[in-house]
Amino acid sequence: MPPRLTHIALRATDLGRSIDFYARYAGLVVAHEREEEATRVVWLAERAEDPEFVFVLIPMAHAGGERSGVHHFGFSVANRTDVDALAARARAEGILREGPRDAGPVVGYFCIVEDPDRNWVEFSFGQPINPRALA
Image 1 (spheres, rainbow, N blue to C red):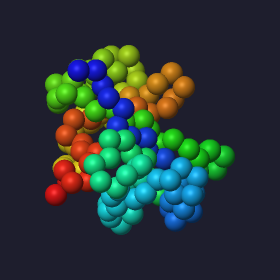
Image 2 (cartoon, rainbow, N blue to C red):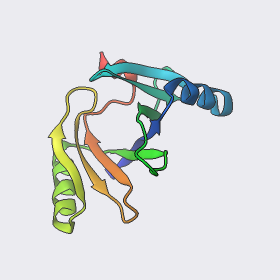
Image 3 (cartoon, rainbow, N blue to C red):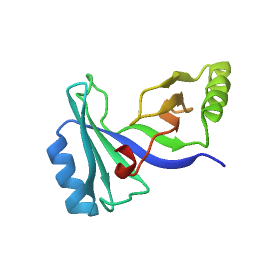
Image 4 (cartoon, rainbow, N blue to C red):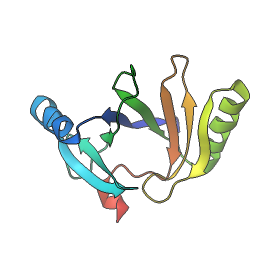
């Protein structure tokens, strides 16, 4: 199974304003939210029940001159072995940013790779996009 795009994580300097913007302009609704290390993380989707794709809003201040925007693109793979193989390939090419590592039941087992334009791309296994699967 090839990797499947499941989410895009966006930096948000004002979470409330971002939620409001995507609700008003794109009709997105909050599908899931949680506190993670004292930070509120919100998932937006076209529907709250059984979403197949989400925007993950992550509150972040921007470093001087850094533009806001995409934090990373998230792809799901079939198993941990696929994550390990992608991480090994990226390590050999000098573009592995993080992992592979297990970040628990919400994030799952993942690695982060840097594309040619320095965008981050996450490959994960065991990261449910449907909030029902989190219980």
